[in-house]
Image (cartoon, rainbow over all chains, first blue to last red; front, side):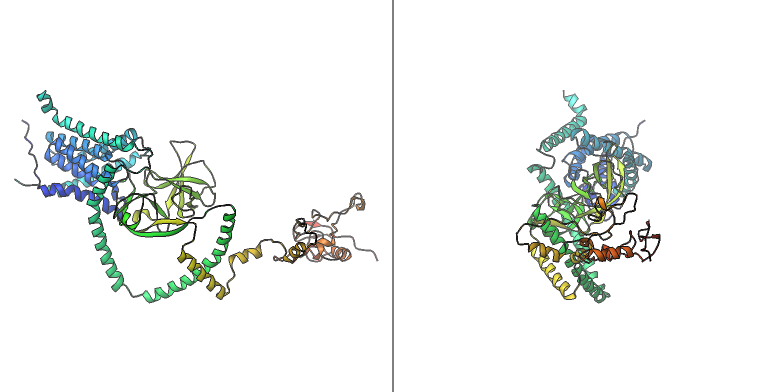
Amino acid sequence: MRRELDVQRYPWIAVLLAPLVAVFLQAYIPRFVPRFDIIDLPLLVIIYFSVGWRNPIAGTLGGALIGLMQDALTSRPLGVNGISNSIIGFLAGSLGVKIDVENPGTRLLMNFAFTLLNTVVYLFIVHRLLAIDLRTNWLHEVIKAVINAIVGVFVFDILDRVRVRE
Amino acid sequence: MESFLTRYKNLLFLVLVLALQIAGLAVQIRRPSPGAPDGHSVRLIRRWAVALISPPEEALHGGGSGIRNLWANYLDLRHVRQQNQELRERVSRLQLEQASLMEDARQGQRLQQLLAFREHYIYSTVPAQVIGTSGADQSQVLYIDKGSKDGLQPDMPVITPDGIVGKLKDVFPHTAQVLEISDQSSGAGVLLETTRLRGVLKGNAFGQPQIVNLLPDERVKPGEHVVTSGGDQIFPRGLPVGVVDHVVNDAQNPPYVDVVIKPAANLGRLGEVLVITKLSDQMPPQERKDIAESAASLKDAGVQRAADILDQRLPSVDPTTQAADAASPDGIPPLVKAPLPLHADRYTPDATPPAQDLVPGGRFTPDLPASLTGTSPAAAKTAQRKTTAGGVGPAAKPARPPRVPARVAPETSGNSESATGVSVPAPASPGP
């Protein structure tokens, strides 16, 4: 018999602040550590909350808002990250309904797959919808996915601490 | 219908959100040109996001600066006196160097004026602190703590003393976005200093600046300096960009190559930058004052100017001859005379005797005319006999004393080897 998965609850202040802090750190730390921009903290936060809420609509909306905020800080048109993060939020929310993602191994695989998928969607939008000649190195993108998967395990562990325990 | 909406509400919501964003993208890219500024609503969203992120960045930066200043102003003053002395000496030395180079620069400017070329000087700059980045590896963007309230405008160039950084893209009241030269959507006109090849600098997938679409050229070597060409109408000409790191084939556009550049400015760890707010064809007053002071100190020190040194080394018109020519009574400008040779030989003009004087099968020895020797023909002939044909004796001495001393061949008899290494026969000695 299939075990019923609980919907995770978080304090509203954590839900509000976590994405903002992620976007802030993403913008601030590369000033001192230039290669930090290979990590996508806002994406990891979207994945975490979407999976925890087990709600694709909330994931889609959260992904769109955080993605648009990321776009606003770049030189690209608004919506590029918004679209890709919306899709990731939707898929993460749908996945959370079906499987238990508390296991670090599952989280590692999930973060790797979602980061790579996010890159694919992002590049599709840039190349096909915007017709921007953006050069891509796929080895770099795979390494980026691996790093995000590893960092994601630790980020999820930190975010687990703000979860409301029943 | 209701069950359809209930069943697929998640998917429908996703489609709705995506449709809205795609519509938003379509509106944004419907601009007349890729470099055109964003629309009002897009600008507004960017402004909100920056307003949300910038204050904590500025606060952190301010706090960090306060601690650093405390350390620098009160605790780390041990070697200040010695440093001050060293810097003073350095400033004096640089002033002298600047003044000597300015003479050459002025000469260049005069030539440029003749060609109606307008030089652009950096007239005014605004210093700014880097407070943040875009945070995305696909978008090389910086944020600085100065904005439109400080006189900044889009497309103004951003530099450091080491080299160029990028240009302003979006300018907000108190912050501004800098598009770095390593971004793929950036572009700057550059020039390879030695090979004089021109190209466009853009970022690559790894966030490195590179000159794109160059034809393969073996002369382009790592280490060659790259400067701005001024062709983009944004960066003034001659600013350092970086050095050539390596050359790679452009897989998408064969046979072109991309020249990857190591930027002169450390783009990864920028602290303070300068925004060029005004370019002018006039030199700024402070710079003019500095140069005047340098020139005065140069005069006092009796240091020879670079232009004077060049004047001595390069061939030029003899002032006495020039004065004599200018004083011709008929007012007809004199013909341009060929420069006098330092090493006269059989190919020297006027050195060959008329055909009737030549003996069939006889060896010809150049008999230099007085115009070349500066002496009487008889004396020249005597001198000619005393020296070897390939050597340069008094016969080769030009009218104007050469600044580079001519090499004199040793007096020899019989077959000898001249200073040039050519074996030449000695003239037959007169009989008893």
